[in-house]
Length: 121
Image 1 (cartoon, rainbow, N blue to C red):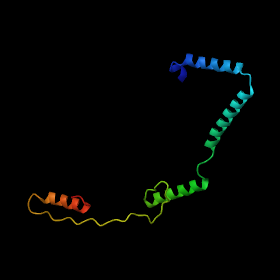
Image 2: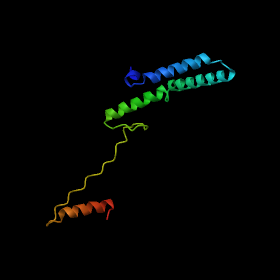
Image 3: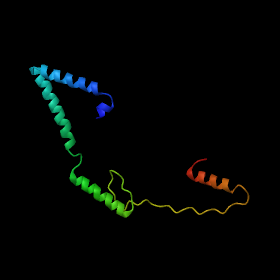
Image 4: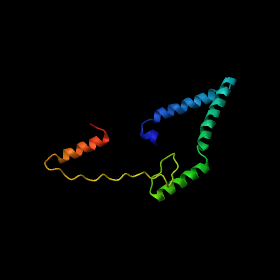
C-alpha cells in the first residue's frame, strides 16, 4: 500500500521484473555459488547477532533490583553504577543571611560576597 501511495508502483514492478530475469538467467557457476553462500552467511550472522543478548540475565536482574532499591530509597539510580544506600550527597549548611546594610548598596554587597566565595573577582 505504501509503495502505491508513494507513486513507486512502476519502480517496484521494474525491480521485480529485473529480479525475475536475474533468477531465470542464473546458471549457478562456482563463483555465483560462492556469492550466494557468502550472502547467506552474512544474513545469518546479522540475524544471529541480534539474538545474542548483550548482558547476561543475571546482570539484568541485578540492575533491575538496584534500580528498584534506589527508587524505594528516593535516590535516582545512575546508569552503569550500582545504587547504594550510603551514596547520599553530603549537604552543606546554608549560609546565614547577613542583615541588610544601611543604604542602597546591600544587594551589591551580597552579590559581591557571593562572587568572592565562588572565587570570581
